[in-house]
Length: 96
Image (cartoon, rainbow, N blue to C red; front, side, top):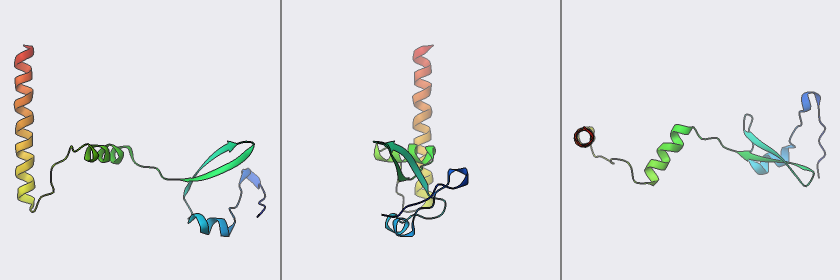
């Protein structure tokens, strides 16, 4: 078991064999936690909030496409926009 030294600014070097097993690269993020008096470092990946929301929409089936052509996609977007406008107008009439 490799031993590492805590350096200035509390930095430690992850031994090469451990880096290789975890496929760690410079700039990777690690989550630091304490479990039973031991320091545990776990590789983590961050996902942009907008990407996470988009992925949730796709999983929930809230998307248009795929389309064979740009024109087909544009027509679908126009139909979708028109359907949203009609729904808003009707909702406004009901509340007025």
